[in-house]
Length: 472
Length: 161
Image 1 (cartoon, rainbow over the protein chains, first blue to last red):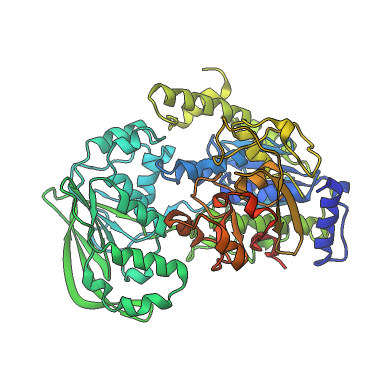
Image 2: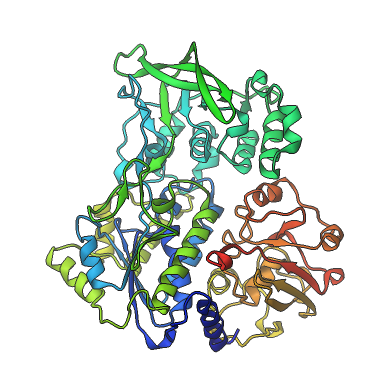
């Protein structure tokens, strides 16, 4: 479409919401985004479309961009990371500025951002773990799956995570896609990981791992699993690993399956087909989803400081809810990974935060006109990238239309990065530009090439900053 | 409205078809490269853009685009730089469902390649999944499919509507 046509189409669309439409070419709004994952870049893409003369500054806590695409997506899922290509294109748009190594609530406050920009978008995700809150949870070798993911993906905070893989049995609490990711990484033949961008130290630790059995423990049944079918199918395709489930847990499902919505139907059918996969002669590892069990306490093993077993209550179902019975069981496990969800943190005390739900209070991404939230910080940590994309597109459009219908007054002059940049300079904070990141990227790729890998991630913030400064 | 995924992707992918042979309905505003995905061999002689596909957006707007035999619908979107937000996020590697299209029953039935497990697994995550949904990256254009019309799910465009 001709550029003018685009503008006209957009104006027509806006007219549906407001009679007071501002010519997008007549204003130069300054917007900023906190966070640089999918929730940030997808929103920015929509804003760039609607506001031709906008300036968008993207602040990131780490020196490197892309959030969970870099630190969450499993190393053996490189295709999922193709979204980085479009994010890079967005970051290279002359109207976009990436500013890494800036922490909201520490280096810069929300009030300062609101003073400097017409609108602020919070998109810094969900990084804190939910705890089970049961006795023994503080024993060694009980970690959150998120920490474990951060460890193998080179998240600077998790690079020194201490745990012991010299054990045979692992219990993962939770049945979502993160749970399956960590199960797969623990059960994969090491050769399948060697060429990925998994960190070198993780590869070495996993090569020495004694793990033979991974249990995936859920409170509810096969009909309620949160993982998606592609991820489960990958478990079925893992070499030298067989899947084992309890056939009784599927009793009566035959009658229900035909009436389920298609996605749940296909997933349940695949689960039922895989209750016990034929044990290959050379299969030496086992993946064992366990249903209807609620963790009650952990016990230490031979080593009094480390976990050795998990006590669970057996549940029955009442509708969609699991109800505990008095029956208890003990599950042996030398490593426990909690994967029962994340919550966000309140990065700045001025953010209206619901600590119970672990997210920012909002309505359709709007906290108040001029202050917005997208992605997991606003929705809670659910869904695949597509869900975050859809959410962020909508929030980006809302931000643009709030400016175009004058809900947010963009005619007032705002200093933008001119002000924030000088503030950061005064505090002696080294900022990282997108060009600086491209230098880091280059070093990572060339180090990877030497090892026959896609990339060797740099995991030390100081080292990232040294490369970014161009003065090694 | 603008240049997003298509143009973004087109700069990232390998070029192996002469640009001269490419028909574009819209003027090319930047010196972008021609993007190609996996569907045709690099050595094959390029065929002319003799086929036509129509994408019907959720608001009813029809976008026509020309393509060659062997192009997937994702190729068509990328090569013509069609403005469809987020389309083809995983670049045709069957790891997302952003290239979801909805066909008429008749077209769905006459497409020779039926969806396999991996495609269905991704379609299960798509919004507005129908009985005649496919992933655009898996539909390969043939002479027989010339004039194909596919519907795009509403997703973002109707998010506030």
